[in-house]
Structures are given as C-alpha cells and as structure tokens.
Length: 452
Image 1 (tube, rainbow, N blue to C red):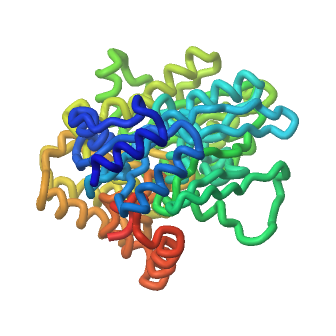
Image 2 (spheres, one colour):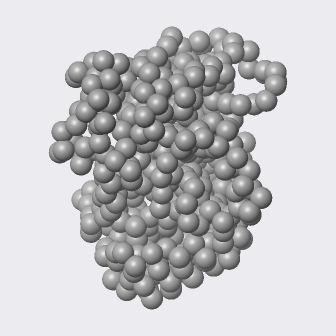
C-alpha cells in the first residue's frame, strides 16, 4: 500500500517534495532533545494549503496516520511518529504577507519561523509579541498549536492573544478559513480557538493572521541575584505590575554557571537564583527601572544594562540556558505551570525527587516567573525505560500536589499523555475526546499526541 500512497503523494506535491529515504526519515523521527525515536513511512512537504488538503484526503482515504511537523522544537515528543506515519512538514508554507501598519497585522504561513516574522514586523516599525530562544527554528504554526508563550508573555500574552484569524485543513481535507478583516467578530462559535493549543490533533494550521504591536523606543534591563527563591518570587510579584514591564525571567544559578563556562564569560551577579527584568516604553526607561529596583529592595544587588550591547549581554545569560542543556547529553525536561506561592516549595521538593531517582543529574529551573510558567530541566540525567518512567510519575505527582498543571506552553505531546488526568477530570477529558472524534473520527492526525 505504501508504494501506491507515495506515488499519489508525489503526484500531489511533486517528486522533490516526497522522501522515503531511511536516513531522512530517521532524522525526522527523533525529538528535539534526542531522547525519543519513532518511525515513519514517508516525508511529504506540501507547498500550499491546497496541497495540504490533498495529502490529508489521501491519507484519510487509506487510513494512514499523519504526524504534523513544523520546526520540530517540541520538547514532549509532539512531532515523533509512533505508527509508521506520513510526516507532513509545513516547512514550505513560508509566505509572509504585506504588513498592514495601520491595523497592525500580518498574514503568515505556518512554516514561517518566529525570527523571520519578527524581521518582517521590525522592518515595518512594529514587533511580534511572542519571542522564544528557539526563534530561528520554531515555526508560527507550531507555536500556535502549543499556545507558546516565551520571553515577552508578561507584556503581550501567549500566542492565543496574537491570533486574529486562522486557515486550517481538517483531517478530511476540508479547508476551514476563520479570517476576517475586522478585529471583533463574534459571529457564531469561536471555532478557531479550538485549534490553538490543540497540538495538531484536530487539523493542520496552514496560515495565520497575526496581531502586531508598536515597538518601544527605549528599553532597560537588569539582572538581580537572590539567595532564596522565595525572595525572588516576592520581588517578581511586585515588578510584574509595572506598566512598563517587558520581561521577567527566573534563572537558576546552576544553569547560569554552566552557560557562562560554555560562553567563556562570567556571571555579573552572585546568588543561587537570578531574576532578569526588562522595562520598555517610548521614553528613556533608566530612571523607571532604577525606581522599580529601589522599591523592590534590589538596587544594591542588580546589574543594569542600558545600551543595546549591555542589554544583549544580560539576555545572553538567559537565552544560553536552552543552548547548554544538552552539554551532558539529552536532557529530561518538565514544562509546568505553578501557583507562585508554590514555586519555592516545588523547587526544593523536585530537587529531592531527582536526587532519589537520578543522583548524578543536575536540576536547572528557569522560565517565565510572572505567570508561574517554568521549565524544570535535568542535565546529565541518564535514566531510561522504567527508571525514566518512575521519575516522570514522581515529578508529575509532585506538580499536581502543588496545584500545578502538567503542561504549560510546550504541550502534552506523547510524553505526558498518560498524565493528563492529573490536570483534567474525567468529564473534561471526555469532552476533549468528543471534539477529537468530531473532527477526526479515524484518528488520522497526530495520533500519538494528547490522548493515551
């Protein structure tokens, strides 16, 4: 059957955009961390919404599962195929429309990277509100599918807040366009919202209408050191309410030390925990930041960056966190959302859990502290199989016990699907399954994702 499918896929998208090469498929079937490997039967790279629709119609006809791939930066194996799937890549859907400066919006293909979209916005004197350390590879479609947040969430919100319209291909090949030139459109159900955060389980996002924002003329950044995590959380609660707040990032000195060594530099502040603060506005932000740090009792311990080079050096400490996590081999990652009152307790308890299951592992906690959206990462974590499963179970139980959510901005993927019940009750899960059944009764798209 697969030979006939490949022939028909080739007819739909062109010979150069279909591959069954074993090496190509192997490279496309491993997750971003390098920990999890799947198997695929073919790779197809459609170049238009119509071609995506034709691919899905064909795969539905023969009941062949499809795994959707964008930049493949998923940290929960969300793009790893488990059923000899056809890999549907959105990498050729890279058109960026003309920026509408008056209405501050733009239309972009799902395969556009965050960095390319940012460049288009900046060229028009605007900015896109979601920024990630993986901006050069993360795609807009994938970011919408997981409702990504990133480094500017405290100011602009998650992807959901940036989306004005969507073009989606349903699993049966039907093209659904929820796009309008007006910003306020409450005609009927908000169907588009179902696909944001759905991790590709309901259909393939092919294009997005996106909100852009005015670009602040001035920024000022500070890095502050803390001995106790609870003190940092208290400071963050104060600073997040600033009108000019643009970023508020928690850093673990353990990860920062590794990052500094990797970059051949040194940490400009001391402390077990670091807080990166940035304010932005139309006027000079220097005094505003200084006043905020003084009121929070941080003026004596903070290093401040005013000019672009100084700010970039401080940001490099934060962005290098992701880069250095693989220094000791594939890391084990936990993306969680926690009540701020539980963050300090979680960090201590999570470190103890790790020590029991993987004594050699180096725990590193960082993330978007204003929202309690944190990334708990384990470097030098060599547990596998049953041992890894036991560690995951203990960590998920801890997260739930702290009143947290087992998934925040990275999604559920396949790695967390067995733990959804810790954050959603039976009625909630049944409702989600009913939605999946309605759109995809044959479970064609992203079969391995979300549901056990």
